[in-house]
Amino acid sequence: MASLSKQLHFLLIPLMSQSHIIPLTDFAKLLALHGVTVSIITTHLNAQRYKSIVTHAMKSNLKIQLIPLHFPNQEVGLPQECENLDTLSSLELFNEFFLASEMMQEPLEKLIQDLEPKPSCIISTSPLIWTQQVANKFKIPRYVFQTVSCFTLFCSHIINQEKIQETLVLDSDSFLIPNVPHKIEFTKGQMLIGTSTNKSQDMKSIIDKIKQSQDLARGTLINTFEELEPWYIDEYKKIMNKVFCIGPVSLCNKEMVDRGNKICIDEHSCLSWLDSMKPKSVIYACFGSLCQISSLQMKEIGLGLESSNVPFIWVIRKLNLTLEVEKWLRDENFEEKVKGRGMIIRGWAPQVLILSHLSIGGFLTHCGWNSTLEGIFCGVPMITFPMFAEQFYNEKFIVNVLKIGVRVGVEVSINSWNEEKNGVLVNKDQVKKAIDQLMDKGLEGEERRKRTKELAHMSKMVIKEEGSSFLNTKLLIEDVMQLLKNKEGEANNVARTM
Ligand code: UDP
Image (cartoon, protein in one colour):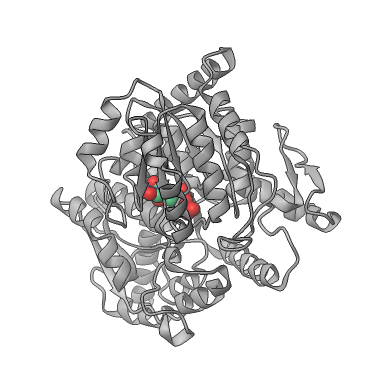
């Protein structure tokens, strides 16, 4: 099979966001390890940002290239530097970003016409619905790469199917997801689209289009693994054709530190600081690449970490490091007070490297799906602090299904990453209480740590040869190969009849 797969050329097209580009570039490496040639299509600035991942893979003789296309940001009124969702200053601009990405269809079609070897398929993340039209035009299959769990996909399918949203009025109105084996309770305010403002209506229509385009795709790849959520995967397979669970893809790139951003700390001093801490004693607090957190909320997180008396690393994204937050840190003498046991990383952290360290005992996370998977495969129990989008689904998955985390207690979604700038979702006492609960040495804490360890072990096995995700990646490659053979057969038949 390896020799046949050498003839294959996969085009990978991620939405321009950390949580899409990171897993897709990781998956590119996994495909290339099977002998496939991979081209990742992105924009010029993103190609620069992710170059190191590809250079790293090329050093191992893997056939991976990044092909940049023009991103028409200025044509739609976005700032010149804005080519990634993490540089959007407001969710208001999401429609423009979406529009600019749609305008990449024509340049991509031109590119494919001249591309050698000819592409065998397109794998793109779900919001890039126009890539389905490109695949149709060139008569090649498209597979949707899902950056969320099967649990999220299946539960949101039920919510839509049962039209549950229409029965809810207030953000505090709650409901149980019917016909699932776990008790999963949501409030209206925690759902993907919680309110009925015009903005959320726009977002709803985008989500509807994404769902329609998914039905036209040849198959669905999910960054999860069969053993992690078997019931939800089985059910999802009943409603969706050709589902391939191929994760956790990031495990193949664990050693990479600069993933889309230069890290803002010296790797060695970070590791020697961690080395000086007791095993499983440190809390790592990080809220992903998109969440915009109010200054008041930042202070509550800081005070909670300080009063917990537990060693910690607190990553503060540049956008959240407002003048007000910096002034507060200075006035409080914060870093002096926590000296020796608390470290702030201002900017981008080497997250997987830190989570993999033996001294990490807990992960205070916003519950992005990549971060959730990273917590799982590094064997770190989590404190869940969801803020928007599918993060609440991931919280329920971590706490109610896997039982490897505790809630900090967020009740409603901020529904965007810049709204309610002054809002406080949880206070310092809630942060401290959740840390105490997670780090507790009692039976409950020990059980949680045991389950997390078992899942970490499982996740490492699945991407090894003969593991479920390894085999599913092989099945995907075989599926593409079979289609190519059928196409060749058809072409030969036509030639014979002429
Ligand atoms: N990440 C990182 N360093 C940081 C912040 C985030 O390496 O300081 C990575 C993290 O490891 C994950 C990705 O960025 O792979 C964030 O994706 P996720 O789905 O967790 O959340 P999002 O950023 O989309 O909210």
